[in-house]
Image (cartoon, rainbow, N blue to C red):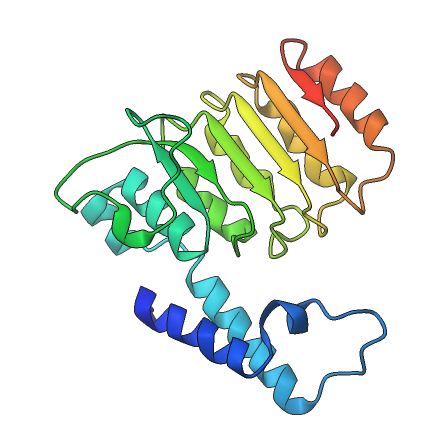
Length: 214
C-alpha cells in the first residue's frame, strides 16, 4: 500500500492528539505497561513508519534516485541541500522541492530529528553527489541502521552520527568502509561502549579523516 504525504501527516497529528507518538514509542522506564489499545496504536504507527521508509520502485523509475531520496527525507521530517544551493540552505518543506519536471541532485542529507529507519537508507542508492550526511536524534534508526551508508562510500566526505540511542559498537563498523570520508563527528551514543576506542580504530582505518568526539 502506498501512502500519500497528506495521509501520513494527518496520521501523525492524530497520534499526537491521542498522546501516542514518540513518547509512547520510547516510554520512560518507570511507565506502566501500555494498554492493548496503546499497543495497537504503536503497531499501526510502526506500519506507517515502514511504509514511509520503503523504496517505492515505481516512483523511483519515474523521478529518479535524487528526487526520491529528497522526498523520503522530507516525508520523514528531515531536510536536504541540493547541488548549486548555498550549503547553509537546507530544504525542510516537502513543497519547497523544485517542480517535478526539474532535475536536481542531492548534496546534503540531514536526517536530524527525523523518523528515518534502516531500510530507508537504501534511498541513497544511485545518489552520486551526496557528500554530507547528518544522523542526529534518529530514534527509529535501529541496530545495524548505518549499513546503508555504504551506498555513499565513494562520495561521502562529512558524516555526523549523534543521539541515535539504538546504535551499538558494531553499528559503527561500516564507517570504516567510507573511504572518501574527511570529517566524522560522533557523540551522545548512549549504548556505544568506549567511544574513544571506537574512534581510535576508525582513525586507523581512515587515516585521512578527522574524527571528532563532541
